Every structure is written in C-alpha cells, then in structure tokens.
Length: 115
Image (tube, rainbow, N blue to C red; front, side):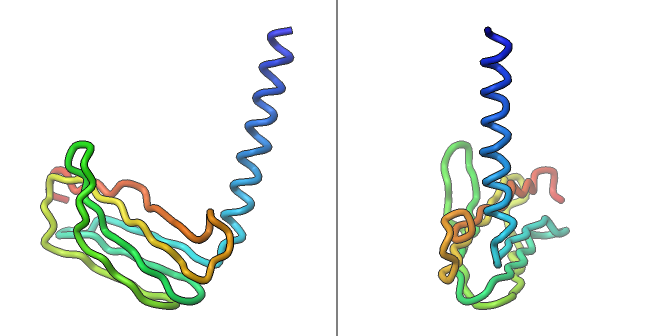
C-alpha cells in the first residue's frame, strides 16, 4: 500500500514538473545573469518591453541596487558592486501572457571572494 502511494505521488510530481517545464519552454523571453571580474552582466531577450531590478541580499534582507528597462534584446553591465554579497535579477516582461513567462528571476549571482 505504501509503495503504491509513493509511486502515485512521485508520478504526479513528475507530471506537474513536466507541465511547468513545457510552459517555460514556450516563453518568448529569457534572462541570463553572470558574474564578471568586477560586476554583473545581464542579458535580456524578449518580444516587447520589460523592466527589471538588480537586488542584493544582505542576510535575509533584499536591497534594491538598480532598476532597468528596455525592449527587445538588451545587455546591461553593473559594475563596482560590493564583492562580498549575493545578487539576483528580477525581470517582468510586459507582453507575456503566461505568469511563468511574464516574471523571471535569475539564479543567485555570488560575488563573494572578489570574483
């Protein structure tokens, strides 16, 4: 009995992850952020206008570092950032209809160690 319940739960998780993956793969927009030798480079690609934020984490606190906006495909470079912090980029694509496509968040960008 426990084994069959386990497999049913596992199967339902796989189906839901597949649906999320398919929804994200149909997005017209993307965000890629990476550490550079003295900051962060953000590449934004989408159809239409977008707005975004570079956010620094200080413990559990989010601190807005910079806001940016544009349309279509654009790159941004943020330099002279404190090196011992972690950052994320949040972007809203105004022309995307699906929630998972409309709001994107980058992975953590860790500048600790002076990268």
